Length: 139
Image (cartoon, rainbow, N blue to C red; front, top):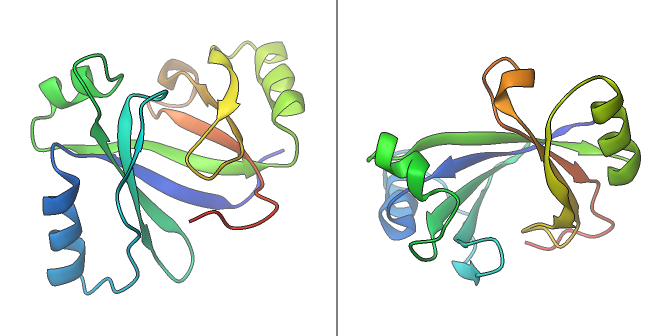
């Protein structure tokens, strides 16, 4: 079921400061513009790497689902890992059949394709995003 690692999600109190760190400290040269995803409660930006991406996520407002993460981790940090799957509904059903807690229903993610999240308690303490393999690269 699991496909390639698509990205690592990193929560940050400031995308602008994180972009500067990835650019200035690590030499990243391909970074998307920041854009709002109010329906997900986040601002998003991608640091493009040769083999994957870093997804920077910043709270959009006080109702953001990453607000509590940043309260516990004020400087930010790894929020989730995202793996590609062929079919999000098949993946959801398989995860549920195996006893995993799927958080919510499939919805459109930052790449413009369907995603779900699997609770860390079922994934060795890591929040896992499963993402339907994009047909075209959105960002």
